[in-house]
Structures are given as structure tokens and as C-alpha cells.
Length: 86
Image (cartoon, rainbow, N blue to C red; front, side, top):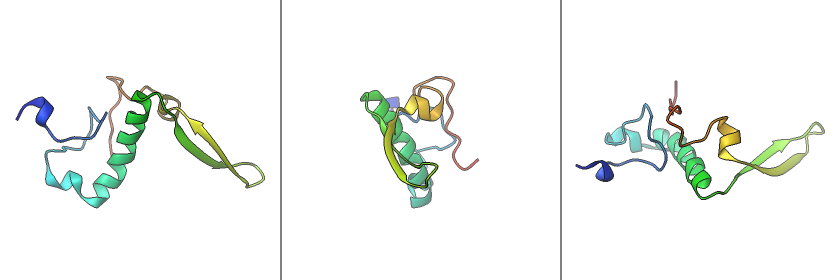
């Protein structure tokens, strides 16, 4: 299997998940891995994440946030490690 044929999710280069393992694709693992991958994909498409929060009056506010601002680091950084459930 070549590097390009290895199963994985977009942008999750360094992770404690081994996507070659069947268990990494189960519901509990996928439900945390996929959003991280989606954020990375949005970053590479130059799109922002939808950001919903409560203001001081407990009213819902809709805005957006870049993945780099959300993580505090660019998602393709060599210094980013996705440590799921740790």
C-alpha cells in the first residue's frame, strides 16, 4: 500500500488515530475525527467555520471563525497533533 492509498481523513496528518485500523472508522471515533477533518478542509478551501455562541444576554449569535483562529494554529502545521480522547 502506497502512502496515497492509505485510508485517512483530510488534514489529519499527525494523530493518535491509525486509520488503517477498522476501529478508527467506528461511530465513536469517526464522530470526533470527522469534524477536525472538516475544519482542515474548510481552511484549505479558504472558508470559515460557522460559530454559534450565547452573548451576555443569553441570546444566540451567529458568526464565523477561521480554523486557524479556532485552533490557535494553522491546521496544516507540522506542530499540530490531533490527540483524540486524551
